[in-house]
Image (tube, rainbow, N blue to C red; front, side, top):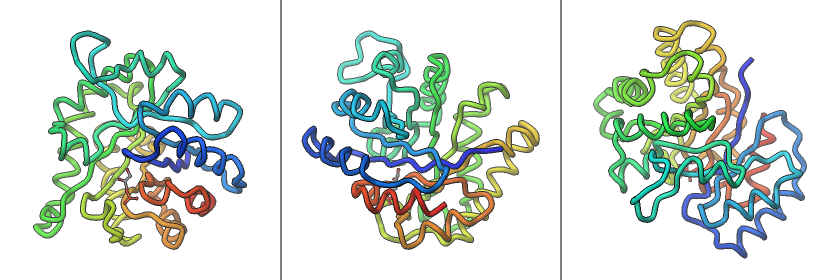
Length: 249
Ligand code: 13P
């Protein structure tokens, strides 16, 4: 049985004081669903968040990492550094990393390998741009992003991957994919996995949807059979909204 997950990607928001406040608000929310809950603060706040949430049912995850173990990579953070402070999951391949920091499928394949070599779980993001969808190329784009960064992995390694479909045109725009568009793409992704890895891997894969998920639309999106949760940006910055989404399951 695959797991439902709701993960809050804080992006480059919240300094230390704001992180403390939001975490204490998150702790006061009641969870009524069985979804796994995660938050991804910035690197500077990971240690504090991890310490503050030790006793809670909320996992603290990283937004990015470098593929090397250590060395002359000024400004970067490695998987083993994340692990050393208790972080077990990392988001890779977010469209903002791809667009603003030139992250390619080849680079992402190396990052995925480094994370898995450190026994970390990866939330791997991908998704088409508006022009791709307008041209009817969304499935081809998504398929190539998944294949290029992940299809060198064996079946066992795949168990540590969570997929997050985030159409770029729906991120931070208030324009969400319709529940039907999300379902269609998630079913296509599952079929693509099935062709490569077989039934077990595709049935067990958690596939998240991301892009303007809010309390008002979460229930309908999560109600679709191939949508197993969400990667939440803006709405994860308010504890009440985030938990309304968590509890939409
Ligand atoms: P929004 O929920 O703000 O659209 O962001 C989605 C996202 O990019 C999560 O990673």
